[in-house]
Length: 79
Image (cartoon, rainbow, N blue to C red; front, side):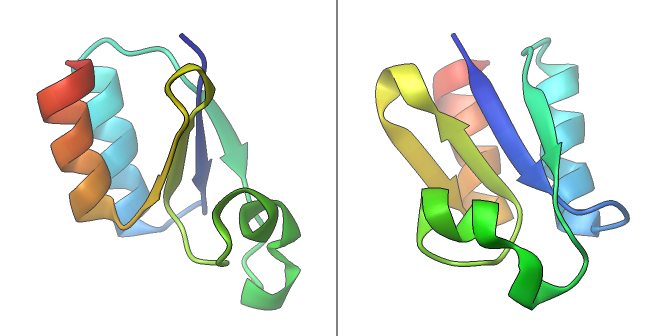
């Protein structure tokens, strides 16, 4: 399964999601985004908004934002 996490270096919510994926032993690719909100075009293309974190699970057709939603998804579905 291919997972991609769009994240910003130093973002505490992104770190929580990354830690949860690591703790669950889930492999993923991190896509580090620009600190300037207006320069996050890659995030906008996949999720329709520019906030991070965003998790994309292509095989399942899942794209989600908001760290709380992602953490719940990781715990209930992926772990």
